[in-house]
Image (tube, rainbow, N blue to C red; front, top):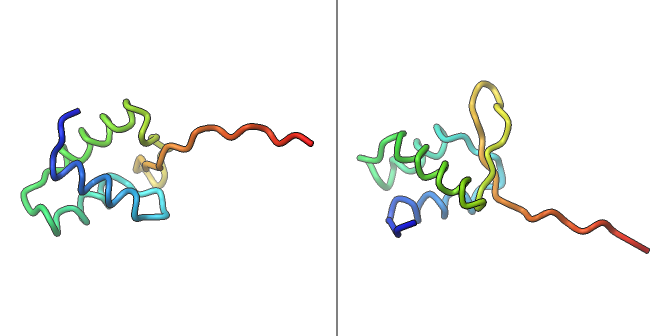
Length: 79
């Protein structure tokens, strides 16, 4: 995956939130810095990040797909 300022801003925004943001929410927030960014660019970058297992696509919430940061599975606790 090649470096881009828009993708870096998307990653920064995803890392800065504690919620599971939708692509629309990310798009609206990224437009403040990149007025010419398209919703398609946001979806395409999110799909690439999900493919690389950096972020997971969550189930639909209020008819919108949300995204969360990838967390590797934890090991079971043993005593």
